[in-house]
Structures are given as C-alpha cells and as structure tokens.
Amino acid sequence: MDKNACFRNIPKVDTLLETPEITALADKYGREVAVDCIRGRTESLRAFISESSDMAAIQRRMDSLVSDICAAAEKLFAPDLRPVINATGTVLHTNLGRAPISAAHSERMQALVSGYSNLEYDLAAGARGERYSHFEQLLCRITGAEAAMAVNNNAAAVYLVLCALGAGREIPVSRGELVEIGGKFRVPDVMAQSGAVMVEVGTTNKTRLADYESAITENTGALLKVHTSNFRIVGFTESVSVKELCDLGAKHGLPVIEDIGSGVLIDLSKYGLPYEPTVQESLRAGASIVCFSGDKLLGGPQAGIIVGKREYIAKIKKHPMTRALRIDKFTAGALELTFEDYISEERAISNIPVLRMLTRTPYELSESAARLASLLKGANAAVAIENCESQVGGGSMPLARLSSKAVTIKPNAITTAAFEARLRLLPLPIVARVTEDKVLLDLRTIPDNQLDAVAAGVMKALE
Ligand SMILES: *Cc1c(COP(=O)(O)O)cnc(C)c1O
Image 1 (cartoon, rainbow, N blue to C red):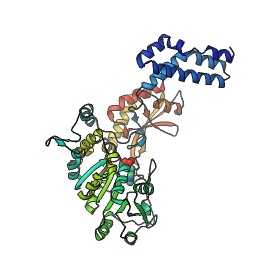
Image 2: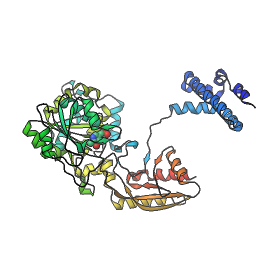
Image 3: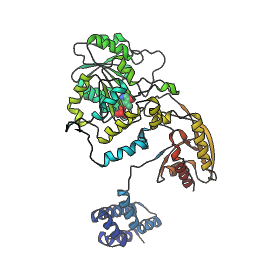
Image 4: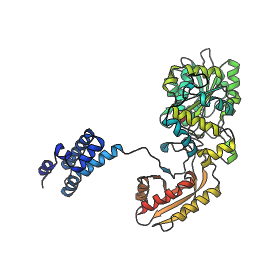
C-alpha cells in the first residue's frame, strides 16, 4: 500500500461513529466528545503517515485507530490528580503536594465538604460570621498572638501584609534576606508588586542594627525580617535578631513584620532536628505581624497564616486584596483540625503526619525496612537494606540530613531506569530515588500501612 492509499483508507467521521466501540463511547460521553476524539486521532494519524516511511508502523497505527480514539476519550475523563507513594524520603516534597493531612482529619473533613457548613455564619447570633473565626481563638491561644487570619499561601500572606501595611511607604530589609523561594517568589518582586518601597540595608553577609536605624525616615512604614528558609550564609556573618529589630521598631513607633517561612510551633531541636525559630518566639520578641506557610513544617493544608497584633490584623482583614486571596472551606476546616493537634506537643508529634515522619526513630525505620524487604522475598532483583539520608524539603532546614533506612532494589531482568519509570507509571505510582544504579525506597516517608501496597507495586514493576 502506498501513502496515498493509506490516506484514502482512513475512515470518515460518520463511518467511525457507526462502529460499535465508538457508538458505545458516544453513549457514555456524548457525541461531541466522540467526534472531537475522532478528529484528534485521525489528524495525528494523517501527520504520522506524512512523516513516517515505516509502512509496517503506519499499518499498525491504522489498525489501532478505533481503540486509540476510545483510549483518548477515556484518558480525558480518567482522574488525573491522584494519590502517589512518596518513597523519596523528602518529607515536604513540593512536587508531591507537600504536607499530607492525617486520615483522621480527612474523615472529619468529609462531612464538611460534601454539605453546607457555617463557614461564614455565626450560629449563636444567627448572623454573618467570619471564616477565620473557626481557628482564630485556638491559634491565638497556641501562639500568644492577639489576632489571626489566613490566606491562600504564604506568598499571598507576605504580599497582602506588605500591601496593607507598606504600600506607598518605605520598608527596610536586610540584603542578606532578599530570598527567592521556589516558583518565582522573590522578596524584591513581591515588595514591588505590593506598592511598598524596598530599602535594602546592610550587606549580603553582615547587617547590623545601625544599618536599619540609619535607613529609618519619616516615610518608613514597617521593618521587615525574612527567614532565609532555603539557604544559609556561613562564615563571616552578622544579622539582627527579631528581638533587636522589635526594640528598634518600638523606639520609632514602627511595626515589625516577620516572614518566618515554615511556621514551626514546637521546638524541633529536641527531636534531633536543626533549630528553627518558632512563631511564639517571634511574637514574644515583639513582632507585630508574623506570617508562615500552612503546609511546610506546620504540617497542615496549603495556606498563608498571619498572626499578630489586633490593630494590624484588623487592617489586613479590611484590605481589598484579602477577598481575592481568601481561603475556602476545605482550608478553614483543615486548619482548625491542625491547630487542635497543637494543643499539646505530644499530640502534635503523634497526629501530624509531617512531624511523625520527621521524628521517626532509627528503630522504627529499621523495623519498617525489614518488613518491606521480607515482603519482597522472591523478587527478581537484588534487594537490600541500606542506610540513607532523607531531607526535610519544601525549602525548610536546607542543611539537615536525617539518617534513615532504605530498601534498595536492583532488578535482574530490566534496567534500573526502566524499573524506576515503571514504578512511576503504576496505577498507584511509587516515586523513588535512584542512586548508584539502584532504586532506593526511603522508609521515612512510607507509612507502615502502605508497605503492602509498595511491595505489590514493586513486584508488578519487576514482572
Ligand atoms: C516558603 C516560603 C514562602 C512561600 O510560602 P508558600 O506557602 O509556599 O507560598 C515565603 N517566605 C518564606 C521565607 C518561605 O520560606
């Protein structure tokens, strides 16, 4: 068959619509979808015929046209965003959705999201309420703040705070804190967008209190401190503590804003993790406003949480951008549940998945690794238990390496790269690291109730 014959042999839309498979497809998803998929697949078949000189391959594509059309329609309606198993050991993996919410919380969220709720309704008063009211008191009790609110994420929180407190005013900030967080969030750019005028003080490695003081003018609106979450300056360095900055702010009647990044509410250094400043410490030092992420070390939903003095929070709540950046009922519900767990440190560590994973003991990790390895007996691969290092991720604690345990797998019959790809393409995908030509499954981020699923996935991918 020559190419012209191939083109002629492509069935017409109406003919394809009459095949039993595509008739069934049109019944299921509607005629319009069926016609769109027919057009899409026949066009790509035409392009393939023009470009390819492999007649056998062309014939195969012609033969599979109807099933390709059906597959295209099924793919359109198949759920695409779905659970994956995080075997990378990176606890706050931004590409994998950062902090997971506990099963107990998702159960409690179910009733909330499938029906109506009192999101903005004050049941006692029978009148309009505030969406922050469900967690505001709790959060104030935990952090010692006077008032609190939340927006879409911490990038939005920083932007909003600068809009509300800094637009048209000068805001001094240390040159050592002009950070870029992943996804194009850059302090100077956010500042410019907010309408605040950034006044850089100090140098990259050294900023002193006198640098801030000499930058203060009658146009200064606030002093800003940004936590350098995802990098560290080491060596010949000096920076100003939030306490010193707050004392300076108080002397000049200026609010101090701190973007603390990760939103740690308990001192994690007790658990062998690096020290991170807590929200409570910043407020105790006198910060007027502290903002942080909901889904980094806090371990809650994606959100930007803003806490601080009542007068400033009131001003931020009234700003027009607040409406554009507001949280929805899912987030309000998940934040309330997360803060409930922070009522005691033990409860937070045992209930919040992120904190659970970060504080897993060497004994627990070894036990889980042994269990997974034993489930993989008989696999067509070299399976071993090895020491490895996990990361915190999400731009938090960039230098921390947490010692962990991994099950490593080197397949016998396929390449390591092919095996890693197959793991990713499973119905319940497993995302893993490859080191030294072995797939490495870090147990830190695999909860025990997923070990059977991981083993089943590995066996399937080795077939
Ligand atoms: C992560 C981070 C942000 C951005 O927070 P998102 O919740 O990811 O929007 C802003 N500032 C600092 C210091 C951060 O660490």
